[in-house]
Length: 333
Image 1 (cartoon, helix red, strand yellow):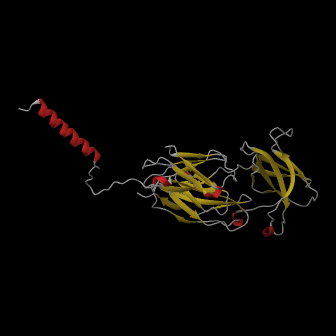
Image 2 (image 1 turned 90 degrees about the vertical axis):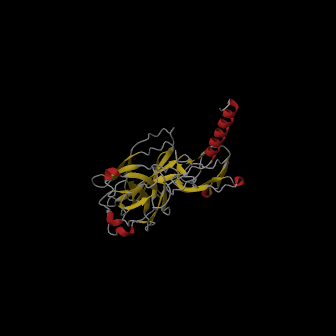
Image 3 (image 1 turned 180 degrees about the vertical axis):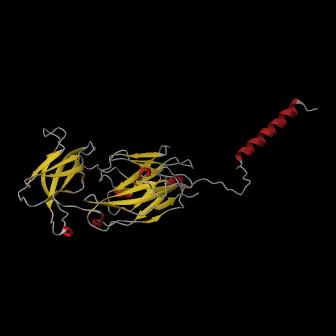
């Protein structure tokens, strides 16, 4: 007969055995090994032109993190046990791409780090510019859509003559005309049209409108021309994707050729879940306004074995574009 004292001892031994089992790693019966991840899956987004927001995972319980962006000489140590970091008031050209680094602080002696290429939001340019040439050639007038950027406080109009007989020698400089609007408090009405009186009645003009924000950063519109000036896809050299990854965890990295000519305006990165990338399936993943920025880290909506199809569209200053062949990238299984 088991006494209550013996029963209590047996229960204590069983509980101790169970507790020890809980501290042991689980047994895997089908040769699958389990280990912690060594990458942070660092992810970056912007909320405006002057801010970067970094988010990451932490499997090791770091108490503090070192954050750095060498391009802007930014360094910080975040001592909070939080897996995010906001960088405010970046005084750098909007739309620029940076490489950001995050790691467990050095004194913790934990080799756990990650990096990502991210960008701030570019200045939204004036668009939908239409040139109306008056009969007889005395005046040109422009109509356009304003930038949605609320920090824009000034824009300028530029123009140049183009040579109808030699389209290959179009200049890429502008003669400044007027400052049309200079302050939100200005008495000058914020119009969506502009009239240019021409002296040489037989000449045709091209125009560009520059938007300037409250930090004096600017972005030009596409060049729009009057008269019989026309451009088409033959006037632009396209770019192709040169490499795309299929073995990285929860990310796809793609690289492409740098645009060869001087009339660069922007790259547009398109992606789709469908092999032939039908138009209604395309997502504008990013806009790149730096000509020499020719790689991109895609980490949005990524998981193991995810497949995405990509194209790179390049636009020149005249708004003429050409799109690359389709390439596929996948994450590791």
